[in-house]
Image (cartoon, rainbow, N blue to C red):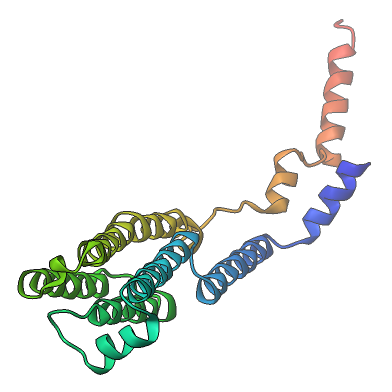
Length: 225
């Protein structure tokens, strides 16, 4: 009984309607996927932005500790910020961390850039500045922080480059490849419900054919004289 009901319902739906229903559901899935991509960022990109924030906070913490160790925060702030000296101050290393944070968050969190040129610029500027600072300035003669702050800034900048180039961009590209079948599906072939009904349906024999068969059987049953 259920099969008869389903076949009768299916026979009432035209074959072209199944394709339109499927295309409607597919377009709804594609629109929901695109809307999700526009509203949020991937988990690996969120991890990258979190690490960029950690870079700024960690360098800031080291700089505050350096200020406190060398004679008090207020006096050292006046010495390193107001009376800035390239050869002795750590203030520029802190500003370098602020520059990395602002540029990378703007590029990869706000603008959602999918290219490596922004991280390449920040890493190149950081590397060049720190190398020149270590060679020209007198930071190495100012104790442990003269070694620690440049080395930590250098390592964090290159970890950010590695994380973006080998983790964020490849994983997001792989996610896009996995969603390509949903975005560009092959057109399905629908036979329609009527063809399924016709597959198991045989037309009734005509009345004329049945009469002819009846008379043929009677002729065969007659005794041969």
